[in-house]
Length: 465
Ligand code: URP
Ligand code: ZN
Ligand code: ZN
Image (cartoon, rainbow, N blue to C red; front, top):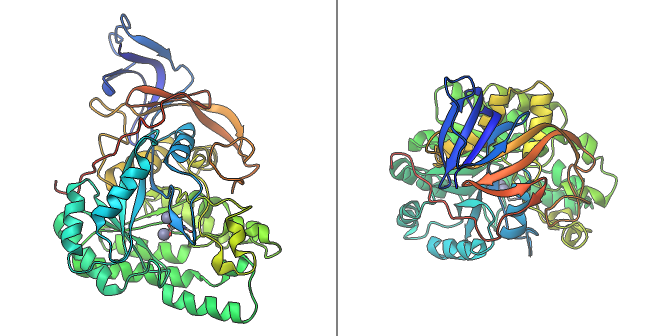
């Protein structure tokens, strides 16, 4: 039976329309304005009344780390718990990261991550490939990954000895994407400089979590962003800066875009809403909850990032969801901040936080909210218009969003498998009431009602394919 969502306000990146939406076979068949001469005939359809609700495209979170090995442990959400929490928060697509370890074929990494997601994912998922080593066949491997729908690669300019690659590797990878249409995502921080600062801090007995942040200056981020963009320019390639956190780094992206370069960047709710002053005063080990990279920055950066989102100097808000439990995982670094697993949880709260602090606060229009949380990531990562919009022919990933629903974020009630919330006690107005994935109701009133394992792998398009 087809589904007819009546009387809602349908919001896309470029329009807001009182309309009915007809869904059949998992696909949107028609969006018809309420003031049309005739309404869509409801006979024979399951009818849902969305009066007073916004009908949004399902959120697309292009940066998550589920079941990821890091710092001697694994991120605490797997593809089941993480994607369920995502769905409850109104996200219907994620792009996670497979990791090619040194000497490993990318194919092996892809098989491993498919194995992690198979039978567990509750929403549709794509995969980026993290490259740690190009070896003899790495460039051909990149092409074969593109053939498997892995249309983006992440490279690290930080974490020496673990994930960091040299500039030659970055340049070669960028040049390959200029040919095969894929996109390089860059973790841009100068890892070599940071390593010196970390070793010095430890030698001086500075071991508390706050030193994680104090040994990663914004200039180390800005320098790497500038270098990444310069290498992309020389390679004739696009580049996407992940988890951008500071005004200094943003300035580099803005200048490049002003010159017409195809440089893109995302930021994350933690950089928009949390700060060094508020979360990391340097008083206790509790601050390990906020150890991720890049680190929290001084508060003055926040408004610059919001402005960057408004003016399209930043294109996307993703979460960089990479949860580690405080009690037994963050605790690995109790006596040494450099051993605290890096990452924080957020997959469930992105839409609520950006809606409340963006739209309700008057910083973002409703359409820009949709664009940065769904449409732009779908476009940039080769999933549009299948995902990220509401139009005839698109997959019916839809959120019935209650703009008046009040919610207090807390680890006591969230669905992520992690024992704390970075946004504990944050009150938000606006929340997902119902969530559909390919036309199937998967969340109703804050509860997941879908089938675990129903999520499908998304073969994403490279540019020009
Ligand atoms: O601290 C972070 N961001 N952990 C996840 C890995 C990464 O660099 O994105
Ligand atoms: Zn990163
Ligand atoms: Zn990440």
